[in-house]
Image (cartoon, rainbow, N blue to C red; front, side):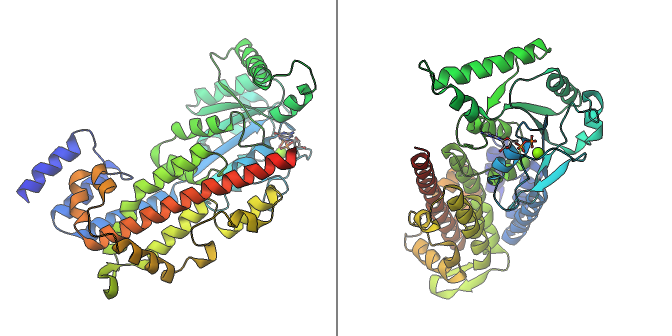
Length: 413
Ligand SMILES: Nc1nc2c(ncn2[C@@H]2O[C@H](COP(=O)(O)OP(=O)(O)O)[C@@H](O)[C@H]2O)c(=O)[nH]1
Ligand SMILES: [Mg+2]
């Protein structure tokens, strides 16, 4: 134990104070449990931390003048088209005087708020934030479909004064591009740059210093500045909120898929630990002790986050106007309805077949604690099984994305 203490001291004080996915305090608690040889105590800390993560709320405010595409943008951010079930109504004259909440279909703690239009007689920018209960929101997205005006800049300054973040989005750029397309000298990049500069110029004139504007089309949400905007929003959120927001983002661009894989990978050790230390059941044939139910829950969560569950695939298929079977064809992992305890046990068997080498990636993340966990056969096997399953799901998601976009480009031709 003495030696362990020395080692722990080294690991935790050098460049890393926390274990992946845990706070400093949780890390300390786990450390204490492991030092006392209490693996299930350590797993309880993880369990509590997961529950806390699931309760974390994220509230996103979408504001701008009426008709600028707020509702369409909100739908796109939720992975929906305007005509999909559960989407916010679009193209309607704004009558609502209250912020309207729309929950994410899978991550219900992520809530998108469709705010009443600014600049109407009812909502002037100096009182607007009070009227929409500004304190509720984690950040604001301010949308304009033509140019930004004094109202937008004033609102942004008020938001800033309240200590919150805002992002300027210039919507409907697909529309601008299609208007310019017929011109002989048309150049997409140049047109986009002109729109961007024009937005920036107006905002500067209204007193904003070095504003950043994201050009977006809610009809083609994988294009233009949308990936950059999503990355920026993520970057500026604190870790728990970042985690849930990332998982809730639509699976429309490769960098987001890669980030999802990474963040889920960092959590695998927690899931493996829970599975083999809380309510573990012996699987004598595999000489493994684990709770297969926890593994199945995680497999399902991967499917939902990457949009490989049946409902997501059906939605995507209808969006790109393709039979769902065509998307399912490129999926190599078992299909959604085939995920079961039996399937999980089958995959566990495969994971035991590779010999009992230490889980390298995990140990390299947290050298000492990693070695201790990895010495447990059940931990190693469940860790490896989830890791390889996640890898497969992430690759499937990329193939589905390519297939879906390929289809869309063809239809547009
Ligand atoms: N071409 C194009 N049309 C859009 C886009 N976003 C919204 N629209 C259309 O613009 C109209 C107003 O959009 P809506 O989201 O209802 O605006 P809101 O009043 O700000 O909520 C609707 O007819 C939308 O279909 C976009 O990115 N591209
Ligand atoms: Mg609307």
